[in-house]
Amino acid sequence: MRPNVAPREAARLAALQGYRILDTEAEQSYDDITLLASQLCDVPIALISLVDAERQWFKSRVGVDVRETSRDVSFCAHAILGEETLVVRDAREDERFRDNPLVCSEPHIVFYTGVPLSTPEGARIGTLCVIDRRPRDLNDVQRRSLEALARQVVLQMELKRVSDQLAGALERINVMEELIPICSYCKGIRNDEGFWGTVEAFIKSHDNVEFSHGVCEACMAEHFPEVPPLT
Image (spheres, rainbow, N blue to C red):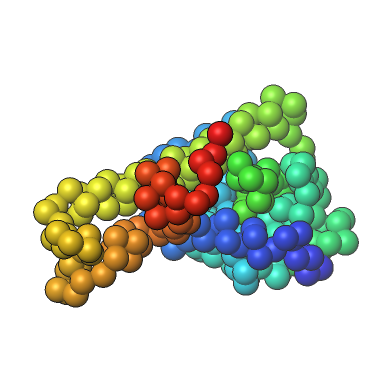
């Protein structure tokens, strides 16, 4: 059965794209998590699966060679539809999955448990999932441990996102620390191409900043003396 589209799909996809993680190389921090998940749950397959618009892509994987599959056949696309951990004890007896090619052929999924990866804003962008080729279940300790590991996946992504933002901010600060040509009269600034413009235009060219304008008390007194000062 084809999974439904997740609620607020556009915002969910925007959140996923904001991490800039899709199609990146393998990283030890994520591979450690899938290794621990497979060992804790005693399963041959564990995945960090990120659900894109038309595919699910695996940031980390244990027990499979493929890097992605179609979203149409994705168990994880079903898992992100709810906030709770999705447990499929025997996919062969579940009408959502029994005709799924991932069940009928390699990797012959029978058991699946997927914990949604929820961003701090509540967007469910993928799962940490474990898979077996036989019907079974997880005990309470295994399930809680898997859910804790899923939170660590999101934490890793958040740390990388914040790190990238800080690196960008430092780069912009370095630009601003350079000698900036400024007109002694109109206070315009000359950009890197030799053209003069406003302070606002210069700053916006180096950072994504929007401006609002006001008038300070001294300028109000000089240019608008008829307006009484604010108390």
